Image (cartoon, rainbow, N blue to C red; front, side, top):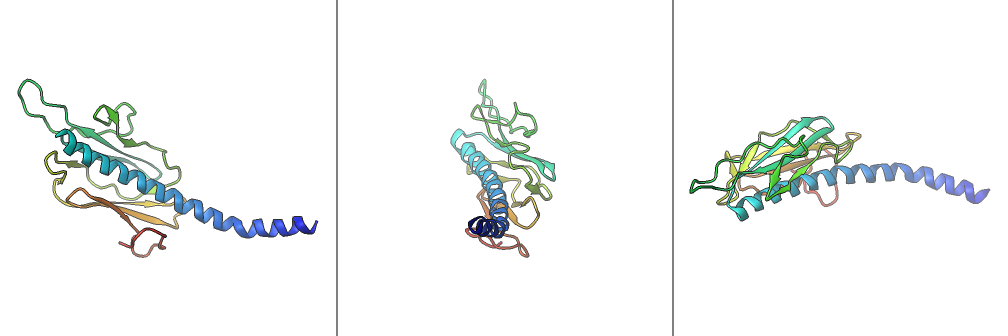
Length: 174
């Protein structure tokens, strides 16, 4: 009985730490997913010499991000611009014949703030077009942790903790 009582006390004390651990890792996983899509879109744009359009859709905890490459040139004509990606359509968002998206519901409970404007990666240098940086803030399920994913004008993505949010190990402050 004493052993069971001690185990019950230790379990009760450990539950908040486990909940906090899972919350931090869920929002961190979502940020890693967004950064992966951004980095892959930029790399594919340069590798295939085709512009790639990157778009986000949704709101709250029902959000997605996806990339769509321009069609290859045909008949001696140059390649056109990349069409916007509808990441809510599971048959859309194709880059090099593969789906490039974080689907709606891939990270349950993780919310998204205001969505940035769509951007395109230029096929020549991988820079963002139109020029400028983009930021999206992801929020953990209970709203305790935030991670901002920033894409600079050169197309490089990074994650950071916004001012006023609790710091997270391995994530620099913004």
